[in-house]
Amino acid sequence: MKVLVGVDDSTESRDALQTAFSFFGAEAEFVIAAISERIPYFYSASFAGGFATSGMHLAEEFDLAAEAAKQRATEAAEALPDDAEVATDFGRAGSALSRLAEEHEVDVVVIGSQDKTVWQRLLDPSVGRYLIDHAPCPVLVVR
View 1 (cartoon, rainbow, N blue to C red):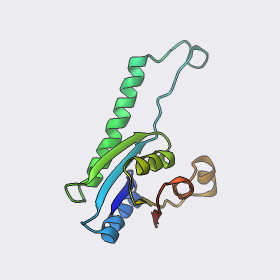
View 2: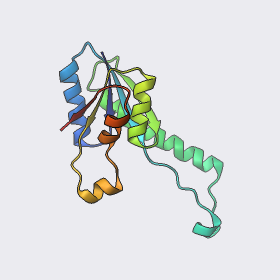
View 3: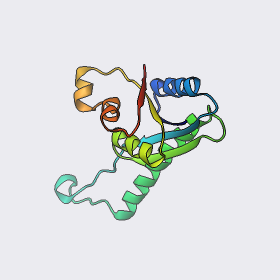
View 4: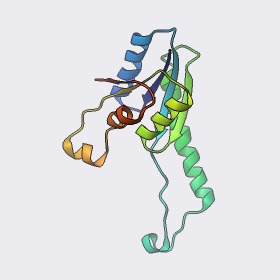
């Protein structure tokens, strides 16, 4: 069985990782995914008083965001067997995890559930809800 586990810096994410390992065991292949939702800001003369972001600056921003995501995933993978794979991606977490699940041909996606207020849900849509509707495989949401 191949298991994709979405990780971030939250306690819920660490719980999801532990639950995935206890459910599927050491025999499973694990892919640990960290998604960088941080998109560099584009500045224009009308918004920033004439300051424009160069292509080189944007590339550096993307590189830093990718490195931070990779670091999170690598730290999470340390709790798993040595053969756990690390994957990183950019964009909204739900669509990126769904894309990674398809690319890696996983059997299940595991994520942690975060308690959010009504306002938080309006401003930051549920990753779990997106995955349930769009993932190419079953989704396990750990509470």
